[in-house]
Length: 165
Image 1 (cartoon, rainbow, N blue to C red):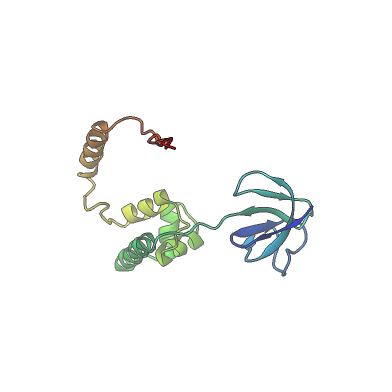
Image 2: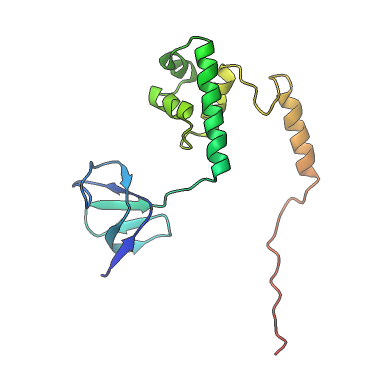
C-alpha cells in the first residue's frame, strides 16, 4: 500500500514510539507523518497497518474572536478566584475538576468544555451573559420564544440547474 503524507493533526501511538520519537499512549502532534493506510474511515480516523500509530485526528482551529473570548473568561475566573483568596486546588475541588483542568481554564485554553467553564464561573459569582442568577431563567424563556418564531427545520437551498445550452 502507498504511503500517504498527513500534514496536520495529532496521532496516538500504541506500543512503540511514533516516527520522530515521543511518548506512547497519548495524542502527539503529527506535523508530517507518512502513513501506510490499512483502512480509511472518514477524514478524522485512520487505522494503521503497523502498531506504531493507531489513529490520526484532525486538529481543530478556532477563530481569533473565540480564542480571545475564552482568554477573557479565563482571566476573569482567575481574577475572581484571587479576589476570594481561594487557591486553584480549593476551587478545583469545589468544582469537581482536576487542578490541571482549572489551570487550563484560567489560561484560556479552548479544550475545556463550556459546562466546566460556566460551572467554575458560577461558583465564583461571575455573571453569565450579563445576567444575575435570578435573570437567567427569563433569558432562557426569551431564547425559547425567539427560537419558536423560526422554522423548525432548515433545508439546504436547491441548486438551480443551468440547462440553457
